[in-house]
Amino acid sequence: MSISRVGVIGAGLMGNGIAHAALLAGLEVTLVDMFEAALPKAVATMTKNMERQVTRGALAAQDSADALARLTTSTDYASLTGAELVIEAAPEREAVKAAIYKALEPVIGPEVILASNTSSISITRLGALSGRADRFIGMHFFNPVPMMRLVEIIRGIATSEETYATACALAKKLGKTIATAEDSPSFIVNRILCPMVNEAIFVLHEGTGTVASIDAGMKLGANHPMGPLELADFVGLDTLLEVMRVMHAGLGEDKYRPCPLLVKYVDAGWFGRKSGRGFYDYSVTPPRPTL
Ligand code: NAD
Image (cartoon, rainbow, N blue to C red; front, side):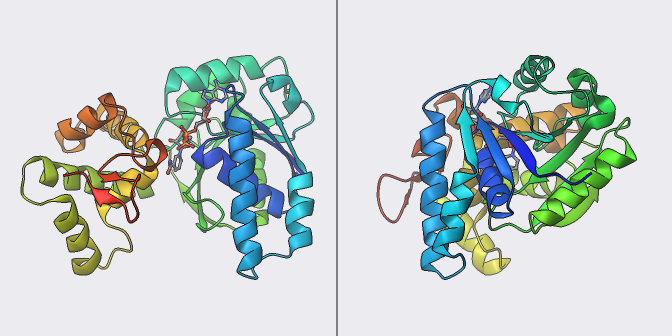
């Protein structure tokens, strides 16, 4: 099945990136968020990011205007009627996702494929909660979506071959490379990456290094393009904490225990870039380490 109309739920960091990539691939996109204010913010971000692509010569101004004209935004799930595939990019909490799937049941037809962008939650369990386990799949995009070339595609135990083939075709249409992962907590990339970032926070917490020395160490010593604490702020500390909690609970090993300093930052509302403060203070240019 070839997809031409998609719905995206959640207009945050990932939802707006997924909508951006889908619009530029020629798809009609309906973007839904329960918070009215999130929608103009997402459209402004997409517009600014497309303008940047136009300035760089990577996109024609007319193509950007045409792409934005294919976008509809709404706070009402009923606006998703007509979408052939819906990608959920709501916060990384199972109860939130479950409530969304329940609300979707009466508005999207039984044939519609539902994909979750979850970073870590079991696709098999979310599929069962969705009431359409055979048409449920994980499509895990990476931030920033328009730039990052990978999509992990994760089948739940009941996902049909047709659903898998459709999701793969959509990912390719969006210009992405696919890594197929088995349904295990955090799949492939985050299973490897997040414990490394969590370990960097332990190193900070124990006073072994400062924010600056840890990030410089991993950039220059391991040739990583971003330091792990810079990366944590970029991903969102709330999201990182949820991923670690899911891995800790799902894999049952202490090596996945979230660092107490990460918990404290999230408790303080210091979520990283999106809240203006995390391991760096983003109210100044360049951002200043906070420890
Ligand atoms: P975010 O907090 O930036 O955005 C979430 C959005 O969902 C917000 O705009 C919020 O208003 C909206 N929302 C909350 N409840 C809703 C509801 N009931 N209905 C509709 N919208 C609702 O989060 P994010 O970083 O974009 O993460 C979204 C998902 O993508 C999570 O599952 C996360 O694990 C996954 N993910 C995140 C990253 C990353 O780097 N941040 C990467 C890959 C996958």
